[in-house]
Length: 433
Image 1 (cartoon, rainbow, N blue to C red):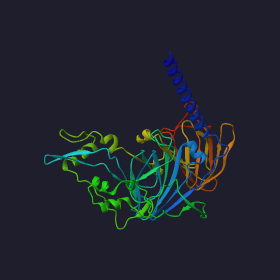
Image 2: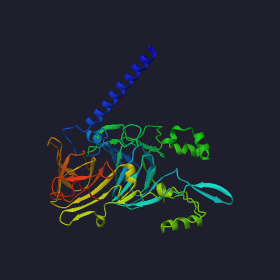
Image 3: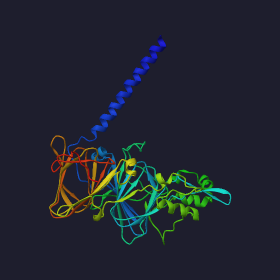
Image 4: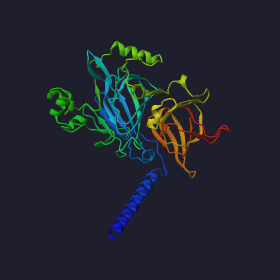
């Protein structure tokens, strides 16, 4: 009898301990959205790179902890290459300005080609795409990517990482895993105490002997053996004493290595583009329609593609999982809004999502109201600032002299909005599509 009693007591203790830990965790998460004031924030951190600038907002700020997101802005000069990396959380990237080439890697998907009686795998799915102003790019967690500015003007992008997403099984710290160079962590830096006139802390450069990409921790001989290269080249991959930062300048033109394609493969692609299945005997692997040809881009900045357009007030464009199915996997969406002079965006709230607003152009008076009727924010939001509107908090925006353009990132793939006024009586909750 002693043994069963002991097991029962032990089980009961574990249940109580588990429930207490779970309750504590739930209380902690719920308490993260209990604050008296929200601020429109400028970037806290600034990294000067060889061919660009990376600025980030402090992810430990209360409003970002509430929404479970991290925000980073990147400026890439002409011929600048943002080094390949992947992150621990899914992210949406909005192109504020410029055009560039972009490549993401779905390495797990391969094509099997038979040539001269032998079989070999070729990675056919590392597609290089072009992106332009107004594009939204969806990047799942763990998918590596890079971008190269081959234009004549700087490229500016804003990225929002959803660190509370279930795809992130680490912690709530945003992490970038770089595959090349000697980059610096955008969110955890050591800074000089001095500040520049804009208030951003400037990074003073890596210390001697630093190496911060994934190859650095590997033995160079093992790298040489794994990639079938000499050890000298393997050491170059580790990029020790490279002080160019996260964005490097490409000398000459960027040359891309692409695998050759057979006539049969070209014919199969042509048939798929025409809506027909590949013919008998093809080596279509069945996965291309799910991962390799998944659309990751939607333009919401083009005025001709607006979902809502009122000539005297402005326009709204939204991308959600109905338009871009990959967003269902990421559980994210976004809206692009342009408010004209003296226009008002009616008071509204989001039923099922937090909203992270980035001001692209101009300024507007914004009020955010909590459940007690208190204004947790009442002020102007200017170009380059970020403001978080928690779920169910009411928000109203009004422009005075300038056109106000902003993009709002939502923590739901099908974010729904309710207006305090102007709702069609019979429809109930509506959503912008």
